Length: 107
Image 1 (tube, rainbow, N blue to C red):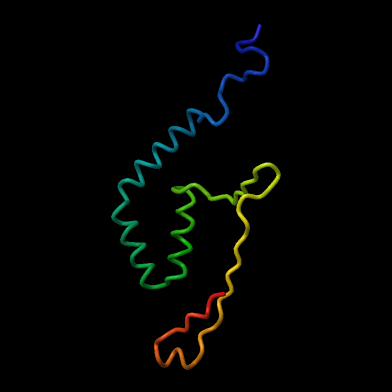
Image 2: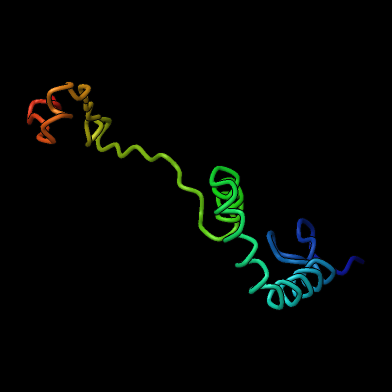
């Protein structure tokens, strides 16, 4: 006779195993001690190569913030929100010289 009922492996979906949990705890302890160094390294990278800095920050962000997904709201087989299109016209040379943009750039 088995330890668990049929269809029950004993570990809930998404639950961490002992090794994974211990590895994560160890990693967090190591990272906590490196906070000042990481901050300094990111500041230096930002000064040297802004693009690379943004790449690094965006890679770390995925572990801190949830990823956004596109959502379409539908009610009674009808889309509630209609898509909006914004056309932006280029700035004319005379607008650049006067620093007074025209109000008719967005339609």
